[in-house]
Image 1 (cartoon, protein in one colour):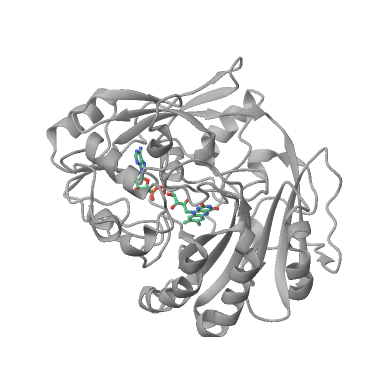
Image 2 (cartoon, protein in one colour):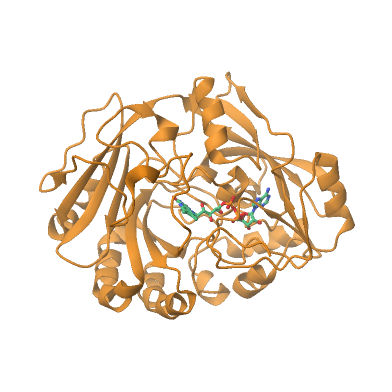
Length: 411
Ligand SMILES: Cc1cc2nc3c(=O)[nH]c(=O)nc-3n(C[C@H](O)[C@H](O)[C@H](O)COP(=O)(O)OP(=O)(O)OC[C@H]3O[C@@H](n4cnc5c(N)ncnc54)[C@H](O)[C@@H]3O)c2cc1C
């Protein structure tokens, strides 16, 4: 039986299809009552599942083409981010941001609003300026940025059809250096929050949420900027994994060694499996203006969830206009939790966090574990009703809906 990467969900689909040609995908979609696309299966729940046909696009011919005049790249949506990144870099181009893991698909990352960190960088989805989508009748259509509903189409949770190709804004390639600091006192971090998060192009703060100091600060600077420095913290002189005790072989080069963006922005190396998959993840994206309140709430609750936690991570993401994005309409701070793989205990702990964070406007990461459903999410997503209407227009019979969307969104 096929499971997701974390083995926290066994897919219930009646059939898994791996078409070799686009036409085959179109025929599959047209011929079946329920269909859904599966990316690399790194989401932690039943989000990608269906009771019909689960379509994996990894056997389709992959392409990456760059329009140098427009500074855009059009890529097959089933490719892994790491492969797209290497292809772009070899042609002198780059993405401004990447999530921590290069092993996930372009379409899966975009459909869930996946993001990296950076005060001035948005999620991967915020780079999208065009999509090719197979609708419920099997027709392939182009969705362009100029269309009025475009901002609803990008972070789609797979509900609007099978995305086959994505056009992304790109920038000239660049190099990055990564530095790790340890033992930053919590009080300094809280007092200097903006300064710490601005100490590099992309900054991640790793913490167990307990104790007097945060565990590690990972600062990724562009090679042309000054070396990172962090007052009151201790520079690491050996490479470090963010989870205490795990091998640093899996993480991208640290110690300020310069390298291409795609080999430094993700935390994990392309050639390694980042961990055994013995984990679950949760993340809430909170309006940045309320970061201090959110951090205080989580620290207060930490003794209650500490036994379940492997590590927490704090990142920043720039706001965008995408209806279902965690960063819709404002800059956010992303509060992430890597749990032990103990679903029931994690499930029992999540209401604690949600009671504290949802009133601040927190939005759960669609690809990770959370318990809130539509009644609670409506307030967080002002365009949720518009998305529901777009979904009704584009897929009136609910071909792409599944148990997750029924439970969480009511359709
Ligand atoms: C170790 C680890 C590290 C992670 N790090 C980060 C991180 O740094 N930042 C972050 O934001 N998230 C992170 N995530 C979460 C991850 O980015 C999301 O779960 C993402 O959706 C996974 O992509 P996937 O290809 O595995 O998608 P899947 O889990 O396979 O699918 C996710 C969703 O995308 C839809 N989908 C997939 N392909 C298509 C398609 N072609 N057309 C339409 N819909 C499609 C599916 O139907 C489903 O709804 C991490 C996850 C893991 C396991």
